[in-house]
Length: 108
Image (cartoon, rainbow, N blue to C red; front, side, top):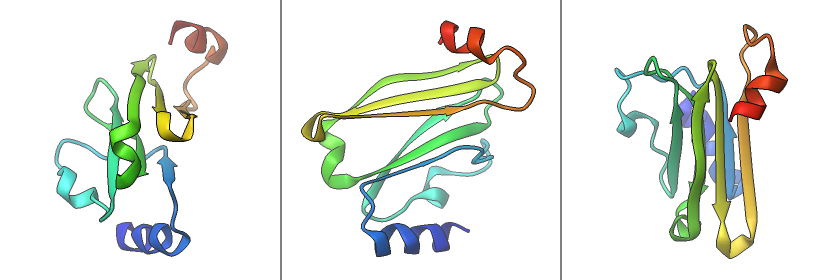
């Protein structure tokens, strides 16, 4: 899957790619999900499963700040800001078991 994703990212010359339900865990090393020319930002669930991963083109990484990386009630939220582009990227994963999503968002 990763070679196809990497090929697509490079073909489209994407600046940012945000994924949810990545199902990464502690057995999968960062090197296994590296995409040349991009830096990954991962938000981990407390049980070590990585759910949210955002790839940002390397040239924008020095201007990127992690505003929020949180896991509450198995809902993951990641907020990144790229100052050079004046762009904020918000990625949220809400699992099917999250009953009260509004309250969960208010707690993030």
